[in-house]
Each structure stands twice: as structure tokens, then as C-alpha cells.
Image (cartoon, rainbow, N blue to C red; front, side, top):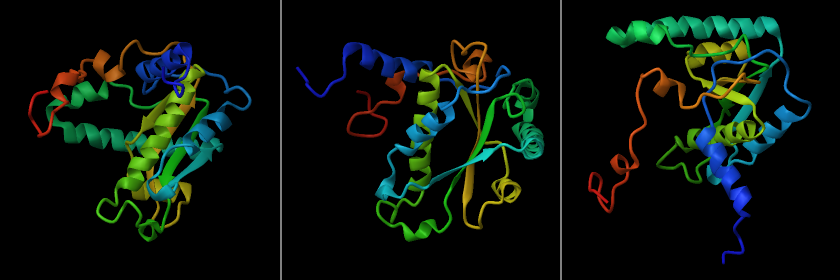
Length: 216
């Protein structure tokens, strides 16, 4: 018996949150409950980080005019993305790719400036600051899902432009516009899978043994 393991019910809850987490684009009106956003942010801040650098920063967008500016910029980038997709442009434009104006909370998530001073774990892989922040965002996502709240990661923006809109320092890097709020329901499967944009690959196609491309 592993005395470090959680109870069966707690383990099931963890795996359920992982399995049922969704990148949400459809929200219903209404605020979060008191303390929810704080709990989600604390979950994110408990994420692992290379060299313990904690590179994530969150900017809560409470100003309606600023939220509208972010939405306008994301929509501009949505059109540019469609143009870059060529034959799939029409299919893409039918997708709902963000919920910035409908959700309860909008957060801009970014990496800190002056990141070059952090060398521990990043000497040969400087992108590990981004990997660390992604782990923090996953924590946020799972905590929100466990409490029945949807979250959507929007990455359709120009980093320089969004940095200017939010007043981030030179050298910092925005990585997400995070939409958070109540939902009518969670998608039974990832939205892009439901829309037949792509499908989840079987585990057998992504797991190798000893050598890349070898079958297990």
C-alpha cells in the first residue's frame, strides 16, 4: 500500500478534472463567486517553475473599455489568421475562438522582463520560462474546472501590440488572454474535435521506446 497516495475518491477527482478540462469559448453572464478567482490564481502560483523563477504575471482587466480594445485586437488577428490558413479560412471563420466580451473575468498572462538573468535550467533551453508559465496556466484551468468554471486560453494576438495595450514593460512577453466565467455546459469533447478541425491521436502514436519513432 502506498501511504503517499490520495484516497480513491480524491484520485478520481484529479483524473476527472484532467479528462474534462476544456478550452472554453462559450460563457453565460454572471460574476464568479467571491474568492474563486483568488483560488484559481493561487493554484496557478503553486505551479512548478524551472529554477524557481516564477516567471508568470497576471493582469486582471477590470476596465470595460480596455477589454473592448483587447477584443478588437484579437478579432483583427483572427482575420489575419484566416487569411494565412488558405483553403481552411472559411472553416476557421465559422469557429468561435474567444469569449472576451461574454466572460466574467479577463486576464492577460505574461512572462516577466529581464528573464535572461535566470540561468538555472535555462542555459541551453531558455524557453523553459514559457513551459513553466504553461504549467501555471494548466493549474488554473484544472482548479477552475473542479469548481465548475470555464477558462479559455486565447493566443490570437500580436505580442508587441498587446504589451502596449496593457502597459507591460519592454522585454516582457504576453502569452495568453485568459477568459474565465460560468458556462451553460462543458463541451463533451474538445471544441475543435467536435467541429472536426482535428482529432486526438491515439496514445500508441505518440509513445516511443528507447528511440524516436520506435514502437512500444
